Amino acid sequence: MPAYSAAAAPNHAEWMQLALQAARRALETEDVPIGAVVVGPDGVVLGTGWNEREATSDPTAHAEVLAIRRAAEAVGSWRLEGCTLVVTLEPCSMCAGASVLARIPRVVFGAWDAKAGAAGSVFDILRERRLNHWTEVFSGVLEAECGAVLREFFEVRRD
Image 1 (cartoon, rainbow, N blue to C red):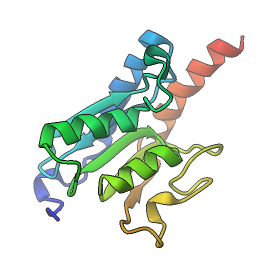
Image 2 (image 1 turned 60 degrees about the horizontal axis):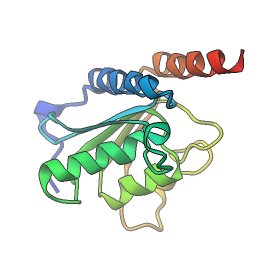
Image 3 (image 1 turned 180 degrees about the horizontal axis):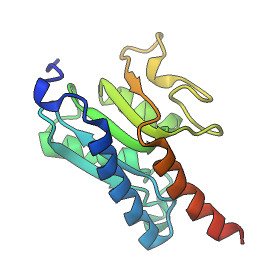
């Protein structure tokens, strides 16, 4: 597996800013504003995604899944070893599972998801020892900003 290089030394806040930019793109189609980026071992962004469920009528069009698909296409392999997935909200079980299946060794997320999170809140798929791949998790990166984008989105819809 490629090493986590010094060139890509955790710059989680910078990467989370990119995920937040992606999240805001989801607002254009009234999708829940969640964004994700997959960063390669050298610190280069390989794939970006934002929720597109409303835009595409695809229940699997979560930000993480789309970013993972785009990164896999960019590297020409489903194995994203050495990469980091950065997402504004704690991944759900589907997205955590996709990350495990893609062999992504690190997941960075902003806000916790107390209802459906699968990186420690409700489930902990990313660190499930019975699976064949485990993930290092960094939580709470720009948590307040990530949470604010989601709260604002839902506050408008509740009025």
